[in-house]
Image (tube, rainbow, N blue to C red; front, side):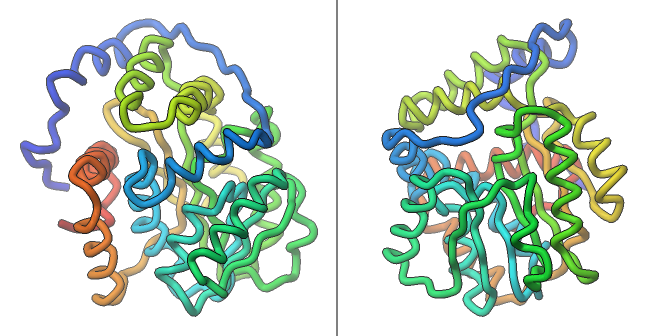
Length: 296
């Protein structure tokens, strides 16, 4: 991998990066609510994940990565889909693939269905389900499972392993997997820094949840155990030099030129702030060894 000058961290990021990497850890995990039911929480998630929203750069990044992991899949299961903003973006890119979003929150599922209708997509449905108990999806023909920024809601590391075991039971032999989540920083000061950075681009409630999610995140070692036992055919990437996000995926494939162009068009159509945030996420994953999903 060839690094560029633009891959170097910004000056403002250097002190917290050094502190996170070198100073002693002082942050213990504190789980957050597994189900998000409050109407204002749901609304904050919808606003953040919509085009131009504070979370859309993350959605677009993962859509570009997931496209390479699920390409060729006939039926895809999205675990803890929330209001469906991430899933609907992916379903728009793959109109001939069937998608099912699973979530425990009735309010989130209601919002997801409303979003689906507004988008006019017919290749998506939503169902209530516990992501550690996927028996209702066994034998349903799924050949891909995805989940983005949701696994940290699980109460314990044991639940994370149960989820991985259930993923394996749902998929048939030709399986495709893409799991992405937040990792818990080593230091509370890193949480404070990251929350402050995003305060101007996220709804306050969403940013407060981002802060709680960082504290609730699992560590890379938890995901290492998960992949070693249940997903040995997957590769794992984290951001670097600070491990704040993780991606676990089966080996990606090349995309048709038309789909690659469509992803580039969506990126170019976004406001400069979204493009800047997207490119920063690409940079820190590229430093962690992940091939750039946009390739530009």
